Image (cartoon, rainbow, N blue to C red; front, side, top):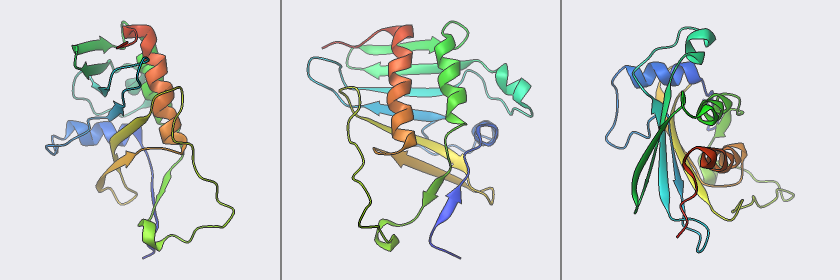
Length: 172
């Protein structure tokens, strides 16, 4: 077996795993985005996105009917929005399933090209870190955390920006 495996992100599979009740204490839900504070622009906060009720979607039509909940927690308290009142939330969730697969390999075993560029660290004045659970190609569960430099990091930054239309900014 190679050190590198492909984790295939399946939104329907994520829902099936979430609904099965196999949650760890540090379960990120469908996805958790941690936003670092940026002086003058935003307070530090955490956004957790989950289905409003346990569900196992068997088709894209069923998935399209799911109501999603996003919870934003900061020093100012908790704000909750639902996708039936904030269509941007549904767009954010469904766009997650269109991200490319993540190749996974221990960093010390990866051979890097001398031409490989350093990934960007910040976007839009704040930095994000995201965590989510996924099914691997053999059906086992994995928790992934991404901090910067790829499509997932860019997705989390765009998700934070898109959800601002629903609950407004957290200005210091």
